[in-house]
Image 1 (cartoon, rainbow, N blue to C red):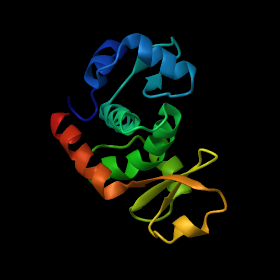
Image 2: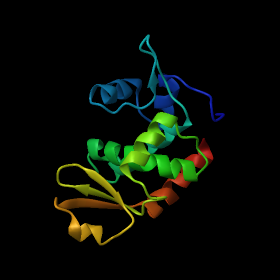
Image 3: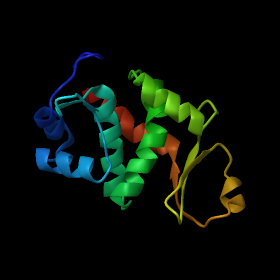
Amino acid sequence: MSHDEKIGAGEFASRLGVSPETLRNWRRIGIALGNAAVNGRVSYGNYDIFAGTLMLHLHRAMFELGDAWRISQKVSPWLASSMGIEVPGHVYSTAVEVFSGDYPKYALVTYGSNTILTDNASDLDSQEQMVTSVVRLDILAEVMSKTVSEL
């Protein structure tokens, strides 16, 4: 798939290994991959495949789907761009507001389901909320590099 080519819901679902009904259910609960047109049709690009795959990897690694989605939303712009995947402008600008560093090393998930990106492992101790999960982004990047080779 070329970097600017878009695909429909059926092909996108197939690439993620889920059903089109699962995509509809995700949209209903706020997991909004792709771009919805005025007519309601949703189209998907390489970035959406990347972010969706990352979310599913995290979910399969025992994260609740909502937490996996929140981590994916915050981490995907850096991982995708470092691997040569074009990140949509609206996604990248939102991510830059969340984390101002070049490339975060950890994603911390707190008890309140917040996701915090940080370079400093000592931030684990300084959180006001209890940290429930830590994702090492270097390991996640290694896993995702296999996905990029398949795009």
